[in-house]
Length: 292
Image (cartoon, rainbow, N blue to C red):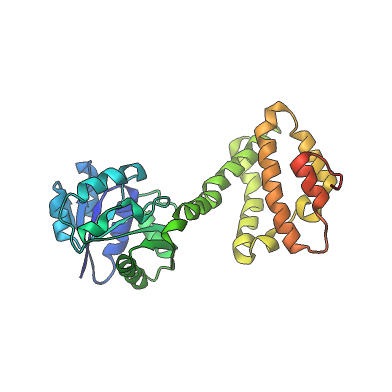
C-alpha cells in the first residue's frame, strides 16, 4: 500500500488528494499546513487526518508530496530534511522548479522527484474531477520516478518523463499556451474597446474565431491551423496594421505584433515552400519591405 502525505492544503493539494484517494492501493495519510483550517478541510474531504506535527506525517507516509507555493518549497525542504526521511519519496508539484530543489537528498537516503499536471487547478471543490484528463510530466531520481509512473498507470493518465535540466523550458512552454494566450486575448479586447465593444460583447465577438483556431491547432497542428495575412504573404495588409499601431500609444502592442508575426512567418515558410517570405520578414524586423 502506497501511503501519501501532503504538505500544503491549497487547491493543488486538495485536488490531488481527492483524485488519488479513489485509486486502488493508494492511501491518503493526511495533511500538514500552516493553516489548521485548510488542513482540516483537506483531511475531511479526503477521509484522512490533519497533522500539526510534521514528523508524525512523515513517519506514517512513504510518499510525501509538497503542494505549497513555489517560493515556500525551499523552506519546507529545510524542515523536512532535518527529520528522518530514509527510504521516503519526496515530491513537489511545481511546474518551474526541478527535483534539484531537494539538493542533498541522497545524503538522507531518500528519493526526490517532481511531477506537474498540465492543467489549471483553480478549485478545491471541483478541479479533482478534471485530473483524469490531465497530462503530467515527471522528473527526478529513477526510483522515485518509477513510483510516480506506477501511480499514473493506475489512474490511466498520460505522462512523460523529462530530464531535470529541461524543467524550466518546459514550464515556459506551458506559460505561452496558457498565460500568454490570456495576454493576447486582452490585447484583442483593448483594440475592440475603441470601437464601442465592452468586455462582454468583445468576448462574445471573439469567441468563435478563437475557439475555432485553438481547436484546429490541437487537432491538426500549427501549420494546418494557420490562415491570415502572414500565411498569404500579404505585405499590404501587414504594412497597414503596422501603420495603425505606429503611435506611442500602441508601442508595446506593435512590438508584440511584430514578434508574434515573425513566429508566424516561420510556420508559413515551413508550410508554403514555394512562397518567398523574405520581404515580409524584413518589414516585420526593420520596417522595410525591400529585399535585402
